[in-house]
Image (tube, rainbow, N blue to C red; front, side, top):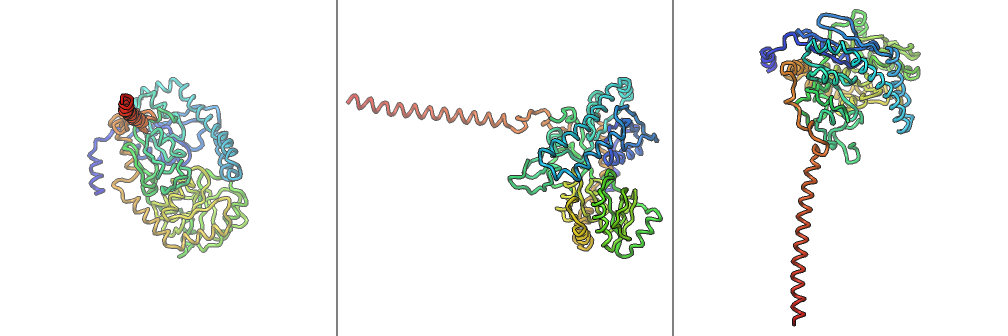
Length: 492
């Protein structure tokens, strides 16, 4: 079946030497998008990435098939990282101590700082009239945008180009619901970020850019191995795990350390590339627990060496995460719950101990927990015994491994890989100059039309009119009947 579909893809008219204009996100968002771009370049397309002088993660080194347009912005890379780190520090350590109002005010200030940098980038883009003219002259086929950084949709609109979005989530799925018009019944489709499952009771259920809503295709970076079942639209394509791939051999020194674990195996531990601010107390709590298991531990960690670090634990500034998760000796994965890392765990069938820190991470881990493949802890409240017992459960209870292998089997049982699907739909938009035929009419309806309130009002009006007429007729008949009797009595 898969061979036949690949053959059909080969026979599908391809876009020879197409041009893709890219408005990227940062950090893991960029790594995910870069996977798509590498594949597009491999297939003969030319990619132009619009980025800026303060980018903390987009690598702007020119290579075959890649071009970069770098915008000058008033802030620096250090400014970008400081704003982000300030928000992460508050989110990780202080948020739970504050009241709802305090959280709202502090997070609003942090988001305002980030949006100010986004606005500066957007202004820099449209201030360069020569660049806009150059982009028009280049005659691109499509714009690929990560809406983590808004403005790519405006560029697509000004250039008159089809727009493809690649997105994991927006909080409460606000953009997907209101801009993409994705059907999301509140009774069983929980919004991302509120840490609910698709089993909700009565108490739990809870104007984005009009131009963003013009997107032809939405590439959603999850899939049905991860998501709860829900309705979706024909222009929403689920491509979770598009960056996953078979593992490669480890560096010699790392392989030697892994092999020294014997039959006990190894545990892989990372809190992602963005976290560099673990407190000494948290680092020692974690190290103490890791030192009490028989497995060897590879911990990606860039802080001061914890005093409680055990001889079985080795610290690394960087680890080949995908290759380690695909190693046969890997028994468990301790993670913050980023989407990329969780999909690599699903791809390789490795059960998870989750330590969510911020953003969608609690929600991500809750999805895996409810599917029986993870244990989740509160990063700030857990002690060494909590982490130790969770690791022992995940490593020693075969049910966690079995459940993750079931998810892995579902992930691999697709006619095309997620990356092949993502590239196919981008090329589809390029071949057909868009995909407007896949966009629902809901984009052209007002909010009251979308919810059929105009129809309901019309029905209520008709029913009200019928009731009114009926009551009037009854009153008339009653009056005539009673009136004639009274008149007859008077005449007698």
